[in-house]
Length: 570
Image 1 (cartoon, one colour):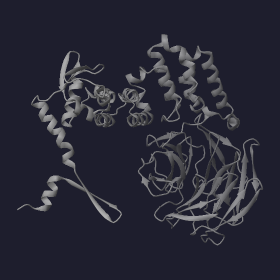
Image 2: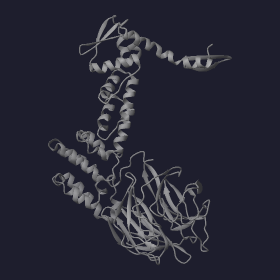
Image 3: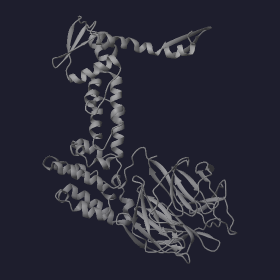
Image 4: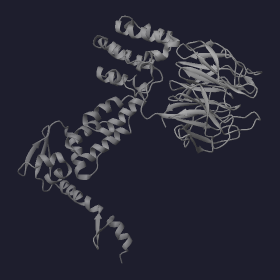
């Protein structure tokens, strides 16, 4: 007696229901039946029966069946639609006999063996013969074997064969692994047009433009007689202003090929001028003063907490990512980002103030030390203006002070700046309209000062509407935003205000959903984020246009620490 269930399994049947008017139609597709004829054709082929056609490659003959080839390949279908007599022999060119044997075996059996030695020829042949499933398995094989030393070649193959998905996968791999690829033989063998397309791209990921320069130089030196004429045409794509002064002088200017090329020397002088004119860098902005911005990278928030611990979050605070720990334990440190690098400065351990600083690269997940400040400080303001990182005020372990200095990322030096007028408790800083604004508290009043580097001095601005100890300040367009903090009675508050830079006036904004102090404020994609705080774990997002706060998360631990936005891959 036959069991109905096992019978259905044996047929591997798929039932499809369709309704037409009042009649129900049931269509059954027996999946195994689709394969059965080809299995039968393969048995006939193995038994050497009913052949009606021959394929010839390099004098090697393959006996085949027209109907099988026509069913498997649009190429053969079109070719055989021209009347041919049984027993005709068709010569195939541009395909190796071993590869054609593999393809014929695949057509009859539905199986194909792909290896590193045959995949390129198999892909080219299956593309020519329009056998899509063989093309797809070859592409899958190559996708899983992309390496720095072969990805450029595979990309060329994919482009030649019109395999768009494989080509896009290769391009993405090349862009993300460019620094590993530049040292390969394939990179040295690129044509001028190919290397030009790479070094001019916004998509390549590099931790320093000096690596782009070295890649070009190595390519030139591989065949200087033929390639030296292309030097200036490639050199112009190196974003020289972003290279440190030391590296620019020691590595670029010292290179004989650059010294002897007038066009390259002019580009180098422009970069040096940018470095020297510290206060005018904003006016000298160009495409070459902006870092590359690969697509796929998005804004992420990095939070610096006590100790060496730090965390990265996506913009909606739905995902948390692992980061390498800082090199030094620190609390109450300041953090800011510049040219997609995170700078963490100062702080204390546990009560001893620090002047050390370090830099994090999200692309390499690595920290490096940078020169220390001249002044030890914690609980201070930090902001970016041009290529300078300003450290404003802070506590030296005894009392708050008004000393200011800035770090030039191009010269790797700290520069003493004019002091603020006031010793601000809990100083916080931001930048707007090419000026630094610093907010802090003095005896139950929260005040603000502004530094204009063109004037070279600090001036007092209108005080905030409310006393706000342990708050933060952030800028967006022509406004500064400040919310929360402790009031004059040391009670946490949720209300906020903004300063109109053009009108020189503070005005209230809607209150946060919860009271906060010791929190961080950040601007990201036009919204303001209030993150963490003492004894609170919420993250709120403020829509500037709607004047409205919404809750994003209730599980983020962050208080009295630095916070910044960097671009990174998920």
